[in-house]
Length: 181
Image 1 (cartoon, rainbow, N blue to C red):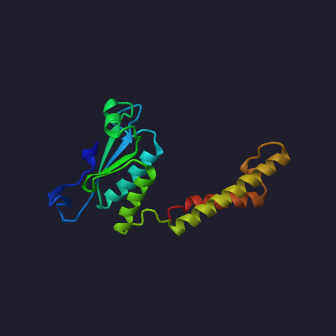
Image 2: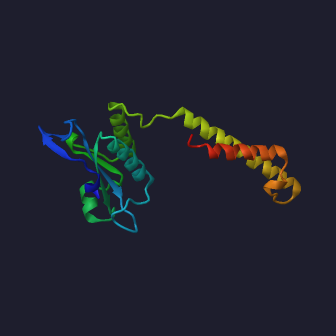
Image 3: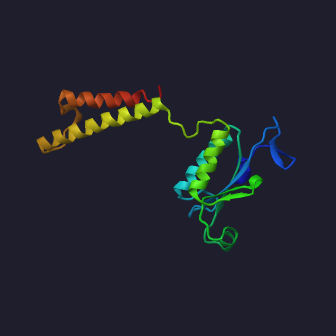
């Protein structure tokens, strides 16, 4: 699995460099919990999946090299190599560093993103406002429809709702229709 995500490299003066433009790219090995279904897939660990997505985002824009290694946490080899630490575990060999705490891993990823001026953790204000508005309108619609249905003592179809509730519903539909714009 790790070989699928590496870029071509040269090893010069103790550091890995991109063979195309000679820039330094740290190698980050991420050890993640293996799936119970298949030992090659990433398991159901939210932190493992989160860190994998963040590292892959940095890899996609050419800033780091990433190797993901799925591990069986019950194997003797894993226990022996990592002294009881649980995934996710990140190793950065060039710095001789092993990160076993989620805060340490997140901190290192954040530092790399900041070092290369990548807005990996910055909020997009436009998207945030759209989501807040959509949620607010959806909540208004659900609350109004629930109250109306409670008064009628039955579930009401969309066609039988009052104009004000239909208007709120139409706002939600319009927002969803233009979500990509």
